[in-house]
Image (spheres, one colour):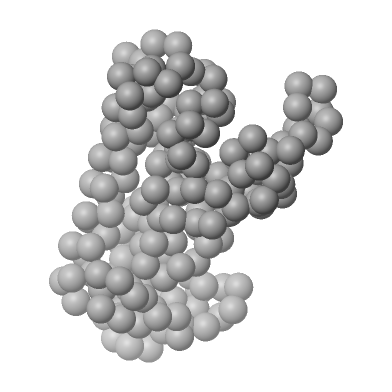
Length: 180
């Protein structure tokens, strides 16, 4: 791909700033956004979103990747017993927070509160009203509404299944970028 075409592509992909000057750090060794756009040309949208979130630090892609993880949880949960949609959402948030760390609380998203059953504001149980947290096993168990031994026996395996799906896509991203 010619540099001008890649610059045009990245400026369209990064329409908010119109800039193609973003830098990618981590496993890519500091490739420019143009290089990443060229590498991700023709890749599925989710792989591009993972690359932009994980390697370019573009947090606006976090929700898209989280929604994809929820869809994966729904797809692979046929043999999961007793797993509500809310639990799948939380599990996807926990997994995303582990593979792409974020200081914002995965439950309240920095608001410091969550709505209770009546819709009233209630201090977030995950971050204790701080707005940021990396949920511990104790918090995960409490938020999912399961017993502590159930986390180790059942839920940790479900989280690992989601992580495996993410890792497969992440490996494809790395393979594409390393071909440059």
